[in-house]
Amino acid sequence: MKVLVTGSKGFIGKNLIAELKNRNYTDIFEYNRDTDPSFLDEYCKHADFVFHLAGANRPQNQSEFMDVNYGLTSTLLESLIKYRNNCPIMFSSSIQANLETPYGTSKKASEDLLLEYRKQSGVRVLIYRFPNVFGKWCKPNYNSVVATFCHNIANDQPIKVNDPNIVMNLVYIDDVVEELINALNDNEHSIDDYCKVPVAYNVTLEKLTNLIYSFKGSREKKSVPDMSNPFIKKLYSTYLSYLPKDQFSYNLNMNIDHRGSFTEFIKTPERGQVSVNISKPGVTKGNHWHHTKNEKFLVVSGNGVIRFRKIDSEEIIEYHVSGEQLEVVDIPTGYTHNIENLGQTDMVTIMWANELFNPEKPDTYYLEV
Image 1 (cartoon, rainbow, N blue to C red):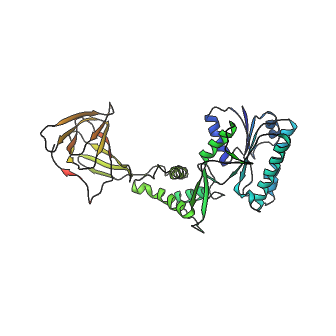
Image 2 (cartoon, helix red, strand yellow):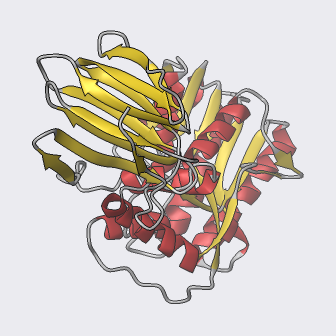
């Protein structure tokens, strides 16, 4: 299948083309403002499907809205008609098409042109009135609040919130791309004359701002957001894409002594925390037990032994562990336990606990195994 994508270097276009290639679509005609205009005519001759994503959002001259948005749509249809190419057309419109602004008027005029074309030819025309689309590769400080806020907050630049109570309607780029590929395969979500992305989110500007600031602060807190919330998960992925190139990494606070080190890695209120424990050769750590707190130990380098003893028993249970064979060892409640490095090199253990450490209620009681 030969697919024509106008606006191929734009936000939606780049994401769509990347995923089309992931799905082994190889015949993709990419048309953008840098493409020789004569190529569009040739592309229209051979295309089996058109994604018409090109458009002007913030031109220097207001007249460019009609010249680009309506004009390019008209040129596209003229070429398709010339070659009697009745391939389906997907058009990227906007919820602003109902507004009497230069941008909204140009989008509405393009819609009307396409609807008339459908009426006259019977061609399958798919018009999407997109709300605010967010995700990776969106240009900040342009026409996307999410992109601007993510970029500015990640880069320690100020943001401006005029009305925190404004409710935004948002769709995520991966959901948009999934829907567009559904449309390509004749499986779009449509209502009357228009199509829609079935997954959308409503959020106030205040909540959006607070979430993004919390993402920035999560490094210091060693936390990750609530990934069970689909919107937060997608927004966090978007935020990370705007990190400065020299700030992908961040240091952790290593608690170091003669025995080795203990470093907290990730903390989550609902899923506990993950830490990294390094033990020097011959060192034994632990010798304590818990009422409710439970843990999982995973030795990833070196070798040693994890010992257990039920607090009212004399029997000692041993599990030998090694980075050569990854094995998770559960630490049950009511058992005092320790871990000893039996090797000649540092032993590295990933430790998960089901709850965050609370110094006021540590649920940790010293007792030799």
